[in-house]
Structures are given as structure tokens and as C-alpha cells.
Length: 428
Image (cartoon, rainbow, N blue to C red):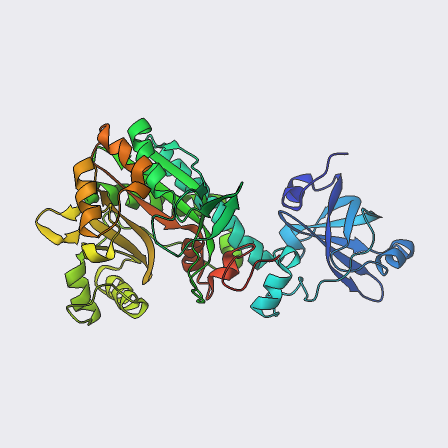
């Protein structure tokens, strides 16, 4: 008999079914016992009245893996309106060692460090797995939105030969006796691939050896990157980003509706045109000094409150960040060279996306590196492409875990990360 998933049971009422999963909870009453079985799609309630079956059930522990063959019977009070009666229960392994917390409770009561130490079992809890389902749906939406705009998915190296992007904040490793580094970003490679496909994207890990010990930073996270050629300026990139974020949220609603319901989350609407303010205006709105070189978290939160209050938007573009705070490959604003054709997208007062227009002429790269006192040699392979003709281009990068954390209202980004890597954690 083919296995039936719990969410398929309403269509099987009146038939004999075979389910399999984990013992989520046992309720042993005087005249009847209830066995709640959990699978990847939800819960199924098994009603046990046979004394022999009940005696076996008493030996089980939570998280034991079982198979149940029974009759699917309508019952409005049971999960999905179905319960399983006259069951035969078979163990698919030895009784499980119970985890150090109760997975059947509505919320995990264990501390976050305890959950992370025991991640393989903690992630079984519906609230933890729901966040990961939302993450998967968001990635599917990212891909679908960019596929619809004729982007090509690429896969670039995660081990590189030089630590060129951010100096010392990289992870070094031994590569067959030569020094190598974990890539902080696919930035250089996705720009080079614009010369091949014009429009590209990538979903992959990036590594930042920065000693941040905060609720919004990880040493390894998933970056959703895109780069597109033949643009007029950064505003073309912003339009594609707007459609991409909208596509991600549509996919989350369509593919992870049950997960959203589990967490009590309603995705926000993305305005047809996301409000945008120049960096200098953003300083004024946030009450920051006019010479502030960047936006600290408190000012980002103030801007998020302003965008919601004045525009009814959970999203806000901040454009024109000072060139001094942007990488050397950033294109300056032709009208105000001290400011960039770059932007951040804030989501509920938190930086979610960084992007902008890039330089595309070889001579401009040489001048930019000279102005910063940086040597050309470490960038040789990257710069060569610009000698052979590159179109005006730009792109953006979305931090997946940060997106999901902000969407579901998680207080700590580790709550929505399966196996986080940070300053202190390298296991499990």
C-alpha cells in the first residue's frame, strides 16, 4: 500500500491508509489512547482502543519513527478533520531517545543556544521548520522572478586566490600548499558573467570573517545575487530589484502559506514604486549629523518608521551613499561625484539589500584604484575583462536569512538559520 501523507488524509476518508512519521505525542486516557504522528506535511491523529495496541504504544517515546495502517475516519475535532481508527502500529526503528525539549508544545521553550546545540531535532518543531520552508519559497521566487526577466543562473567559485574585497576580513585556508580564501561575495565573477549572458544571478554561500556578535550577523550566510548589463544607471537596477522582492513575497504566499499561518505572518505588499530618498535627505529624516558617513542601525530604524508613516511602505530605498563608503568598483553620480550611483534597500528599518551601478571602463578602474592607493596586480584577472569591452551594468545582493528574519519577525537571525556559523559556533 502506498504511503499517505497527513495532508492527503481528507481525500482518503473511508479507506484504509498507511502513514509513517514520528511520534509527536501520546495521550494515554482510561478508555482510549491517542497517538499523534508527525510527517513533513503535518499531524495525523490515531485513535487506539485495542488493549494490545495500547500496551505497545505505552512503550514508545516521543520522536520514535512508526508506521500506522488504519481507516481514515471523518472527525471535525481531529487535525484536518480526519482521524485514523482500528490501527496497526509498527516500529520503523528502536524507541527514540527523547530530545532535551518537548517538540509537541506550541512553542519551543528551550533557550536559543540549546536549540542551536541540538539543531537536528529542534528544527523538527513546526515553528522552526516553517521558517525554513519560507526561506525555500523565497529562493524559488527569486529564481522565478529573474528567470522571467531573462536572467541566467550561474555558479561561481567560493575559494579564491586573493583577499581583494575587504582586506583582512576573510577566512584563509591552505589550497594544496598555496594560500587561498573563502569568497566574501560573487561580485567580481557575476560582473564578468555579464560579459557572457548580459543578465545573471546566483544563489550561494558567502563568508565574512568579521567579529560581529549581533542578532543580525552571521559569518556564513546565503546571498541572492543579480547583475544586469546595458543599464542607464542604478535606477534600472532598483526597478529589477523591486520586481524581484515582489516575486519572492508572492512565492512565499503561494508556496508556504501553511508555514506563514504557523508563524502568524502576513507578508507585506511591495509598492509599485518603492519610495526613495537620497542619502543626504535620509540623514535629515533620521536626525543624523550632516557629516555622518553611513547609516547606523538606529538611523535605519528611524527611516523605516518614517517610510511606514509617510508612505505606508515597509520598504525604502536610500540612494547616493558617499563614495568613500562604497567599494572601488562603484560608479559615482556624474552630477555629484562625491556620492555614488549606489543604494541600499531597507526592509522594516533594516538594511536588506546593497546594490548599484558599477564602473564598466578599464581606465576608470585604474583611476579608482589609484585614488584609493591600491595596487592593480591583485585584480588582474578581474580587470582584464574590462579591457575587452563591458557594457554599463549594475546589480544587487540580498541576504536570505536577513530577509526571512525580518519577514517573520524573528528577534535573532539564528532563529531562521538551520545550522548557523558565527563568531562562536562551528557545530553542529
